Image 1 (cartoon, one colour):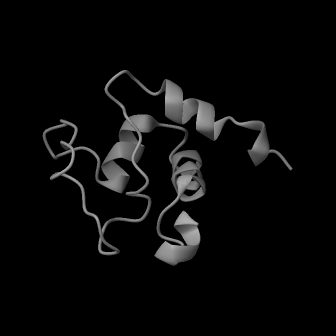
Image 2 (cartoon, rainbow, N blue to C red):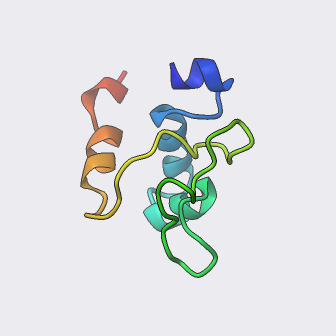
Length: 83
């Protein structure tokens, strides 16, 4: 539904595709999707995020990175992605 209603701008599949294209490098992903500032700090919820289609590709949906990348890693490694 994220992809459908955002015209292929948002969704976990979009984030995963970007992550793979960036060599599975999370810091590069955070920069690409606008989750980190130019001073390498994470943007703050809710005001730091863009809640409209003008956001960078992959900006939404959000996942909590305060405790590392375990949740998003589990999503990106889920068996559903396998052919």
